[in-house]
Length: 448
Image 1 (cartoon, helix red, strand yellow):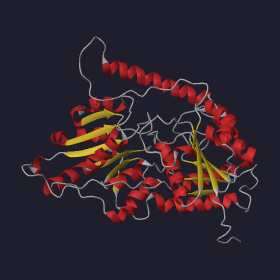
Image 2 (cartoon, helix red, strand yellow; image 1 turned 180 degrees about the vertical axis):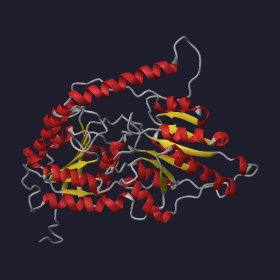
Image 3 (cartoon, one colour; image 1 turned 60 degrees about the vertical axis):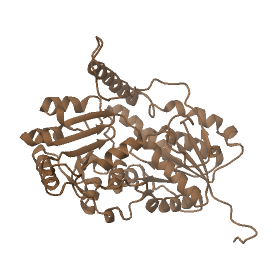
Image 4 (spheres, one colour; image 1 turned 90 degrees about the horizontal axis):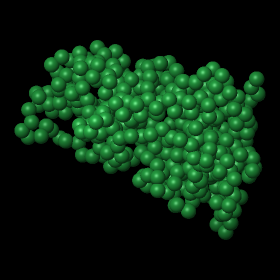
């Protein structure tokens, strides 16, 4: 029991995350939001990350003195991230050909790295933080450790520090590691090695957390670890004002339907082909549909648009800043969410869907129609799911007709966002961490 003279000390949480602000990567957002929320709730938070203080522009959510930034060592080659803006002529080399060569080299490098490097290409971050944490933390010790992955090298770091400090640790799966994850093609031998390594790392874990029920079931049934669900959520930000009507002087009948896709396109998994094929089916109306792609796509979108004969309906911006990405989403009539149309993707709840919901533009999802993402959009009245070009074309015609009549496609109702904000999810996360830090039932049941 405590009193005013002897208040209970703040619980000490160490978050281990390779990605963290100021980096602009999607993988930095969930651990950053948890760090900020825990600090606001009175927790003593420290963050161990590989990201340097000058490696981005995103605001850091906790005091810099509470971050322990340890660079990977030795440095390993990383795939290039070239820009993808408008191409202009000049010179003897073909910019588009150079981009295709670079994209092919990047894909080969990623494939080799995912196949040969254990547990992932960030394995060069395992030893540096484990060796330097004591000095960098200046005597601070955690009550509980949270590791967020991928990359899953961070799980090895967390398990190592947990043994050293005799502190419980919790594994946060933003995606799966060795089972149920087919976004990266690996050989059967490599998958078996990964599974064995994952089972070994999880021997000491207090609990696991992931973003959807199907993923939680996969982890629990495979490794026998108690697994909780804490979804990602909408990060609050100012919403740009919506235009009340078609601007003066604009002929609504000639209005263009603007769609936008922001984010990375995975070769063979997030395919824009059905969308551009659907635009081609519109005939003369194809000229009234325009799709903006912002993000790295390895030349896939350009090739699909040229094959379908609708290159004029597509703009490729390449990677853009988070703020520009948000502006593109808010200004579009509708948003395109590309996912994998396969039952193995049923449990994927991409963080992008929450960005799109915040923009309150209707979503066109190309992906598995019985997955958790599709169900969320349908239940919230926030979008439609279509995978066949004919069905997509029908939806585009419907939106075109609405825009002709009213000058705009209606916004998703604000009530569709109820309960989906980040803070609606993170209170449960602190309960899980608090339970892990205190006495309780073992996380594991026997697994053979």
